[in-house]
Structure formats: structure tokens, C-alpha cells
Image 1 (cartoon, one colour):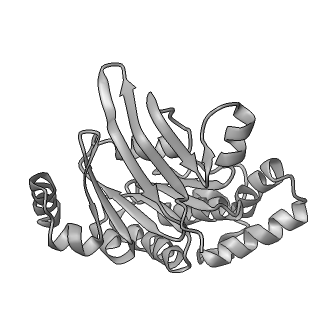
Image 2: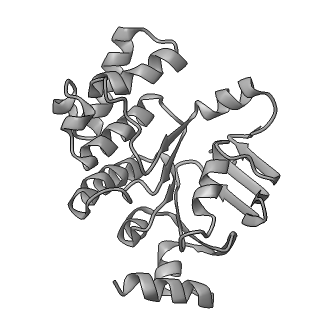
Length: 247
């Protein structure tokens, strides 16, 4: 059994001018695990996630993905990144392409597979996220929740080893949040390695193997959902949860 971490962050610092977004963060994510990162706005959650796939480059420290050092030449970085699916707050779909074309395109460009194979795989992923009947429509004809499910299907179509989610429901209306979280819960049950930055505490409790609480660029507390939500040790964790769970 593979017990090596799928992602390993070692003592990562990230500065934006004088702002210290990450202040010496170390984290290991093991295969098949769902790690949910919570914390107040500006705590460094999204910066950490973006460093994991090299969208941001840490000021110092190391990041390893599936045993490979995420640094060096652009070709090796792009190869490592091609193994990681990323889903953002905004869906970033091409408005002039149908749903099916949106999910197929990157497979053809990055993976260099045929149009027919890309289309078949895209349909499989649209079935997986429960939106196959929308294959031939355009993004503007979809609700926000449906668009986000298309974005998830697009990431899954690349057959990634790891899925990264950066607050995937924060731009959605409340009634659409559940349909996206339900898809993510399904993926968690399938055993996909996932790192999720979210404000959805119910999802964190239901889907996470581990919950990481960040504040001021630091990992303040890290444990199982039960430990973090029911028996937090750190005073800052207790304050955050008492505020957020009171709403």
C-alpha cells in the first residue's frame, strides 16, 4: 500500500510585498484522503491551495506532488500540474462552446487525444456529475450550480490524481450550493484525493478525513472533523467555530 503523501508542503512561506500570506506551513495529504481547509478570510487558505499547483510560487519552502518536487523547468511543472484538477469559485467556462465542448477541449489540447475519445470521456464525466442532459447547451443557459458541475466534470475528464477545490460554492446562490456539494461528496466516497478550501462546515464534517484550521498564514489546528468541530483545543479555533456555527 502506498503510504507516501500525494502532496507534501514543507515549511512554505509566501509574501505579497510585506503581507505574509503563508508563515511556515507544513502539510501532508495522503492518497484517497479528503482534506478540508477552513479559516477566516485572509488566513492563507487559497494561497496554500494555489501554491500546491504552482499558480502561486511560494517565497521559500518546498512542495512535492506524488514524490516529485514542484519546481524547475516549465515542462516538468506542467507535467505535474496536468495530474491535478482545479475547480475555482468562478467557473471559467468558454461561453461560445457547448458544455460537451468545454469538457472535451483540454483533453484534446493537453492530453492530445482524439476528438471522439475526448467526447466519449466528457460524456462519462457529465453523467458522473449528473448533468449529461445539458451536453449540447451553452454555459449561459445553465444555472450557477450547473456551470460549477460542468467545471468539475472538465477537471475530472483530465483523469487527475488530485482534485483541488478553491471555495467552489462561494459564488453560488444558497439553493445551488447543495447540488455542487452533493457531487463533491460523491467524489469523496469514490476515494479521490481532494483538498478543499471551503466555508461549508456541514460539508467539512460530512466529507473530510482531516480538517485543517488556518489563521494568519499558519495552520493553527489539524485533526479529524470530530476533533476540530466537537473538541477544538486552540482558543482561536474555538472563537472561529463559535462565530461561524452560530449563523
